[in-house]
Image 1: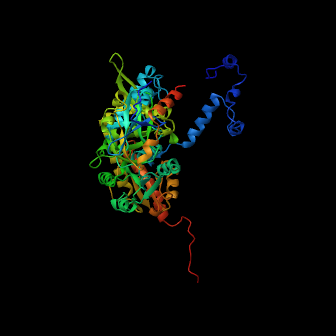
Image 2: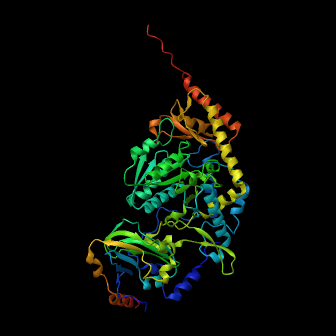
Image 3: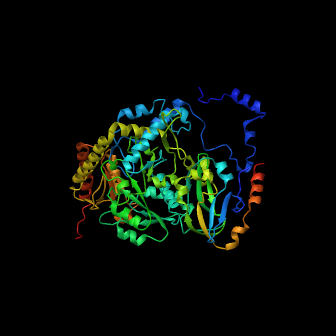
Length: 466
Length: 130
């Protein structure tokens, strides 16, 4: 059965009613030169059975690994109730409802989500989500430039996720916004005030402050936020939502708090799913709300004085402001936000705090085990949340491949993005890892590294020539 | 027909400009403009000290129906803003010609006289109604 509401007969009847012979005629006004022909590289449709089999086979090639890989996406336990509830018919849509009269349940859920995110980030207001963390950061950069009005450069520490930096660059480069890279402290793995003083120019609009940063390291967020404000810049917090259960909320950073907080919501109930879809979050101070992109749900009363929920501050958006809208983002990642809201409700503040604490404890335990191995060492001396950089005495790509052969994703190699660090990788242990996992990891690591220390098994004996 | 005071000058984008005794020029939006926009909920004013050119956006008015830019009628420097208007946006609906939004120190004294007079503005409004 085709899941398309209009039958051929329906379409023919509608065309006849308006006196048009075929659908293509409705697009007459688009010049032929601008129309694309049929999409040749897109294959013909296949049956549900064939699609199911194809997807199954692709999913299996992902394999089932013991996972110590973080670097922006994190394996967390998701209570079974989360996705059971998300797939209920009342919720099962990825789209923001426009009609308040028909969508009170979904609107209330999004309002609850905004309330939770505002509380977690310590900010006044949250939007109803964005596509993902990287594009949320790009939106925050655009928002900062609109708000600041004078500056068009952004201080972007190298401790921000390298992929996120690339996404931001791709989105803002054609809008005359320049990203100034700020180098990190080689000893601490953090962004120093000295480095910022060296990088700042008169035409900067904002500083991006990652917490924890890409290396897992905790930045000195109070000092960085105060520095930004002293220079007349906005402070954009780029945060992991799980970490906020333990760490100081961006709204409380420094003496005035960060101005905008963004991040990826994946750790809140969204499975890894081979890389997506995830969702981005954004929250800000009240004074910047009219520059914030995305949907915002508000609580109000109807004509009988009863509580109701509706889209609000829509004059920011493109259906009203057209080319002057704050962003071309109108929709959100509704389904994933539904999961996150239920996830946070089930865990509660205490549950989230326990998850965060367990992640931190597990990462410390993992690091304790592997740094005892000869040839493994920590790279930075500052505290970390649930990830850390370790250096190995062999090519890291070879090590990762060998560990993968043992069913372990051992970490994220840093040689491509941070060649100056040498053979380093980023390792992560969330609350899902156990002591037995750490022992297995250490055992395999020791075995692979020690093989390197020994002579090759069939070494050719070189005898001094007689 | 909305009232159009004779002592003011007007723009095609529906701002009014008033020459003050001290040589500065006060700017607001016309009664016709507020009538079209409906109930005001937000007014964004320029920053004092901003240099503006004629026709440059220097504020935003937002109503329950729409948001619209406010343009500088003439070139000059913003020397004052009326925070009473941004605090109570509905004052624009109540008295559009009393609710000045910002004051300019004109770059050239004669610029304001080149804007539309009340008669010409009323003709413009009448022509836009068709």
